[in-house]
Image (cartoon, helix red, strand yellow):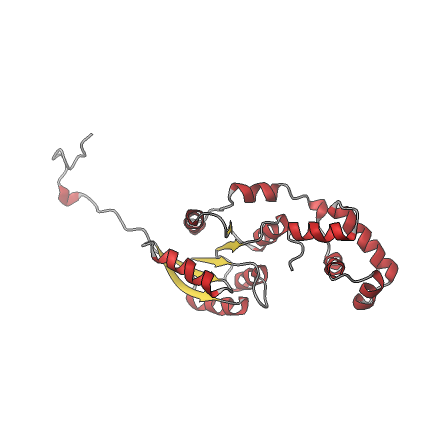
Length: 226
């Protein structure tokens, strides 16, 4: 079907030109320089994206975010010093409306849960196609939530009963280090019987039978990172 301009029913002088899409200003927080260069190069191929800042640590990201006020921040979870989740929380204390997409290799339900709880609106695994990241940036910039199907399924499978308290996490870290109940008790300043009870609770909540299985499960879920 011909347009009204083509048929002459409307003068071209009165046709409003389409407004160019606004450029999305992106900050990248990633401690690996090669990864930063690659993602920046990918964004450079897009007219609708602009890389405004890059940070290699969480502390640097907090400073640069306040300076540049990006529309969307791509955040790795594993950073030297402050973690990605801690960095998101620190930035949101100053800029509550800041928008984040986690870009990580971590696929555990606890990783995803912690990131979303901190304020991430998107979660992309680094091995996913680059189109997935581009779609995530567009959707999050528009105010939406972007969780790919695999991420949604992982998050949906998470059960609140499997959560560990801060003290249980401290015990779990030391279990992963191969320390005995006596050694853990000495480091944490608690009774050995208390440690034994904590270990039993950890095994129950992770639905495993022994300490080795607990460490393996914790790594898979993102409760521990080596």
